[in-house]
Amino acid sequence: MTKVIMRMKDIILSLLVGALLGAVFKLLKLPAPAPPVLSGIVGIFGIFLGGIGMEYVLRYFAK
Image 1 (cartoon, rainbow, N blue to C red):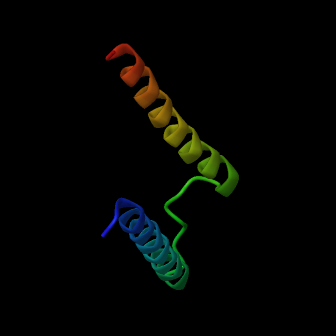
Image 2 (spheres, rainbow, N blue to C red):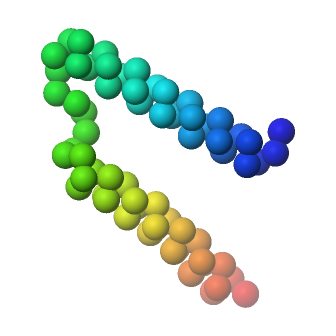
């Protein structure tokens, strides 16, 4: 399989597992183990961008 298909499978599997866990937590009347929605999404996106940015920096200085 190609890398793109493998990544899509990982993304879809992560989404399904997350949705399942969210449903289980709701059924058990437990608080979601995540930060508030918007700040959590922004924080995860920031971590993602930081990782990509560092890849570029390391690749630039490796030349």
